[in-house]
Length: 409
Image (cartoon, rainbow, N blue to C red):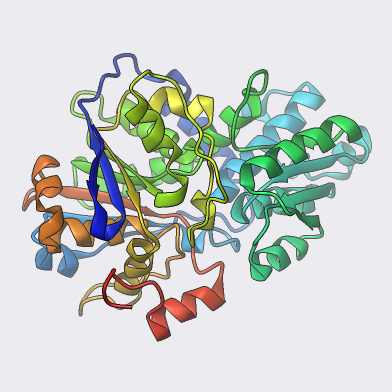
């Protein structure tokens, strides 16, 4: 049964994980293949796993660990990991080459461009995924056409165009924009690289999801180097669910003898994973409407079938959060306790810390904290998936207190 805390526009669902078989697509063997590729990209280096020791002490937790993707390449978001890997896999498929033995330098060579001719890559995006596809096309000397939903922030549009892509902002919501990109790809003979799946379209979305494993593998290695054997809890955001499912799949394989508890977080107006879990029939369910939220990267109304198979069975908790949760996370990460490092987090990236603040500091959420067994021995892993990709809104949140806790505006 879904539990509501009305004064905070907050809903959650607890359940016992039901999953049994481990997802082979997200094994350590597959992750090492992905890492091999990403290490060849210009400017690659692991992003930081930030240990917020003082915050953990203040909040009564053993560890608060934030994988900070705001510094990933020059694109300031994790999405480039999936987009670049999928584009490389697509080219290798067209070239009839084994991805495991091909170097990135060869894929960007004149020889490959001459062999393939001019191809066009396309996708629908709220910003970060489209920028990753545009960046990959730029690296490869190919074309990209990117479709964005209504209300897309001008800075995100400009960032994609800066890579030479053609960008079209539609008057549609995200899910309808995906359908438009699909139709245009079919009509024009373009190659669509979408981070959600549908019937007959699963190979490329799986490649994109596998690309995200680099972020997870880095985090596990960094925890080990810090003497942390495993996370007890993992807070992970979901839009269509692709990144969340990758995190769940990889960490299940890595800690299969003692897996962490997975908490899935979504915006209140776009909580399709929570809606699907609450339906209780095992099926993926869409949510309708304009999907209004400041968390643009999570403003998706239809779960990816590939993601849902994992997110249905393995998490223990699903929550939907109002804008104030993400905004408060931004403020907390940007203004750390003395001794902790500041983190620049965009709206989607800050959701985990914002939720954790409610759990440990707000009595209304005490029951949920207790049910999740969050305490002094907990080692909490969170993902800052993006930097301030909407600088104007970021400043409004920090400087002028936009989107405060209900009752404080």
